[in-house]
Structures are given as C-alpha cells and as structure tokens.
Length: 251
Image: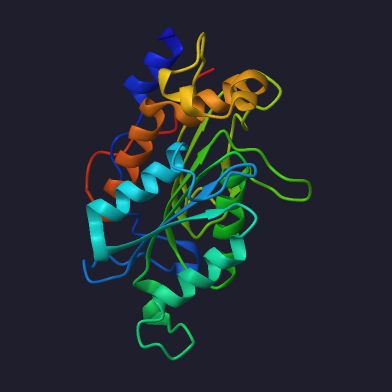
C-alpha cells in the first residue's frame, strides 16, 4: 500500500463533535429521540441496489446496525429530489405535511456519496439550507461535478464536511472543498489516496470501470476509505464527543 495512503489513514479524523452552531442560528439537536437520517448517493449510472459498490454496502450496513433508529437509504445521483422528499417525510413527525421549527431543529442528517453522488450530496445540502434544515455531516468521495453545479462550496447549514479524493486517470475527484461560512462549517480534511494497484475488492466491478477509470474505481472499492466513512457517520449519528481536528491537506 502506498505511503501516501498510509499517511491518510493515520491522520484521518475518526471523531466528530456535533456542532453547536448551524446556519441561521439553527443548532442540530442532540436528543436521542430526534430522527436520524443517513442518505447516500451512488455515482455515474450505478443502480442503488448494485451491491458490488461500497456505498451501497455501507447503506445496508447502516440499516442493519441501527434498524429503526436511523432512516438509511441510498439513491441514484439523478434522483436528488426523491431523497429530498424522503427527508421531508421522515422529519414530519406529526405528519401534517409541513415542517415546524421544532422538527427542523430536531433533525440529525448525514449525507455521503461517490463521484456524481458526492456532488449530489452538496446540492442536496444546499436545498436543505434553503429550508433552514441542518446537516450534521457531508462526506464526498472523489467528487465530480456536473455542468452548472457546484460541489466545492459546502453550505452553512452543514456542521462538518470531509473530502476524500484521488488525482489519477480520466476521472479524478475534486482536491479541495471549502466552507461557505467557516464559522458554521468545519472542514475536517482533504484526504488524497494514491493507488499503485487496484484494491482486491474491485475484482467484482465492471471491467470497463477497472480498465478505463482505474483510480476513480479504486477509491470507490477501497475498504479502507469506506471504513473511515462509516466511522465518521457512526460518530455523527451517535453524537460522540471526541477531540476534533483541524483541516489537514495531503498533497
């Protein structure tokens, strides 16, 4: 395993403090009774039930681990509006068709994705920002934006954000994300992974992905990356109060 990758693992934050501040004065509630939501997005034209893909496996692991305590679902990156409607439905505790200030404040939301799915994470967070709905954590893995969309600037309703990327091949992720308002959003880190060879877990991926998009596919099927993503999500959902870290860029 390349040295840069080991450095990324060593420095990667495995902890997360639930932020006391969010956009427009809205703070995510720490109550264990608040609804918890974990939304994932697959990249490219991947189907959300294709279990070969690590983000699909993570979504299923979250469902199995948390059961009814967490709404865990994964979406096609082209179906962001469906994810948005699902969040509204889950937050609407009194089922009156509208979200009260209390229902917004009580929300605990985590968003994660790969490739176009990572870009969809930022777009969805921005939609939630317009309704003053806070987000605990966004995770972007080798984020690739679509024309007319901005996957670099994280909106201020997000408490914490992290970026994983690689820089080789025709498709490679955005190397840096930034907070629209650093007083509300903490960027946990920008973590670069380099691959001299493809992880063994990639053997089941489509041959075209493995041949033409080696680096982009490698980071998606790398269990080391997704273990760290899962640890961050677990910390966010549990409200673990562990030491925070400053932004770290691996160049």
